[in-house]
Length: 237
Image (cartoon, rainbow, N blue to C red; front, side):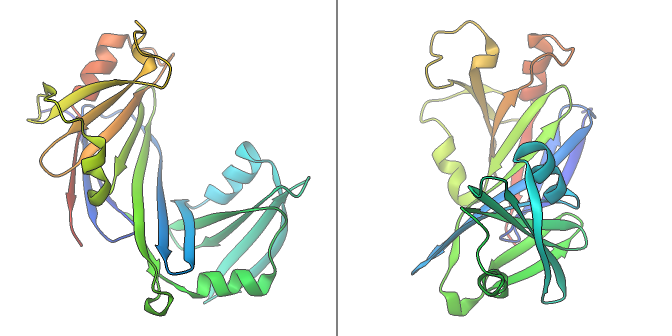
């Protein structure tokens, strides 16, 4: 069967095999994770090298304010001009670990303390990260997002969250042996545009939520055929 496959790793260390229907270019892979436990709660985003500069330049418009080292890793800080948001990112060899604060930058001491509480292992396929045991923190949610040029965005929740994504009723069979459902976006029920829907594709070992692209050169039928060919499968660490 024609197509391509990605081998990725989530922050928990679980491995994701994501099969795609064709070899369209993958533009970006990002990961979201939230840790909770006791008084501990914080969300992080993981992107490839250069992620911090892209976010602060093209998405949030934040200027650099500080740079220091945590456990031998470069850590950079940027803040918006009005002081409403701060981006803090630890840079590894392959990936960057980013978190956000509302308001001006916290003290350097606080930021060093934050990253000092994390165990981090960076690999070409992804960054494994978790709170140190003494924090009593644990992974609450995680997901991997893949942007594919002229096709759409695929969001794959972690194994624990996947069951909440799949509808209770039976879906349409896909050519990879899974099921697919069409779910209207909020306030879009009854729309005749396929772009007003999310598509859930589920197999035996995982599920994905897909938003198809607009203006990419493919007609709706071809895009839906692409969605039909997606398969996400998790293997535990």
